[in-house]
Image (cartoon, rainbow, N blue to C red; front, side, top):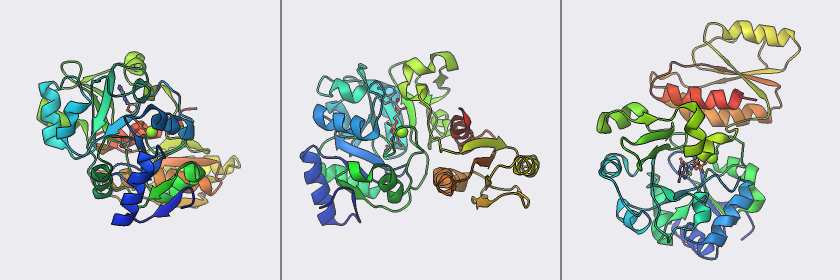
Length: 328
Ligand code: TXA
Ligand code: MG
């Protein structure tokens, strides 16, 4: 097959994908959070190919995906009780656990750390691929480093089309935000990356989580050191009520303005309007955020003005990603 060909995941495509993975090739696949760029997670050469394709810094570790919690023992040295409770409550699902690494996991997959990040994805295609392959798959989000995570197969093709052997198309990602990363090597467990599973949901099971202060977060979660989720256009965050005025101001300054709005009425100054669904838990905003950033960026606008949301549940995660996208 040709490099980067997009295939709907019928049984033949899954068999072909698993064969490519066994041959140390890269296969992009859908998960319920975002698309992943998969390789044999226990093979250092295959894992190295992920870093090369994404142009990812070597000290930013990857997540190993497994088909079920029963495969955890093979890659984690110890599994603290809190990790077992989280796995029982939320797997398969958008939660990644950081645990002590067994020597079988190659250091290159873990950025040289003595821990390994693991999750069981909830997407049927991801699970079918993991079963067909039969071992852990290392898979970061399938974007070029520094670009928004892909929520469609077409996003993967745009970023990495000539660098992957195959892209499995499972339709739009369900959550549209990456998994939540929790470090279970300390007590209480520590929230390293906000994600599709809300802090509120985790704390309802486990009680209060620790959170890194901004100064030390970088050392614990290497991924947070890098600018992320960023389109080429400048991103400005605006509240519902101030958004129309900011559109008018930037328009008057000669900018080509696009907006991502939920409730706000942007007025006449915006060249492009991306309206996300207005549900009370921000599910629709989360699902469409990265597609909106990519889509508006592709339209060549200079500024994307994004409507802010209240900092609760997924709203907290959306605001985290918007701030990273807005950081220069
Ligand atoms: O939803 C997701 O998590 C997606 C899908 C494909 O599963 N994957 C994903 O991977 O977002 P990636 O590589 O883009 O982000 C992984 C995050 C990074 O912030 C990384 O630093 C952190 O997890 N991480 C991985 N291993 C770690 C470890 N051993 N200790 C601390 N943080 C770790
Ligand atoms: Mg990523």
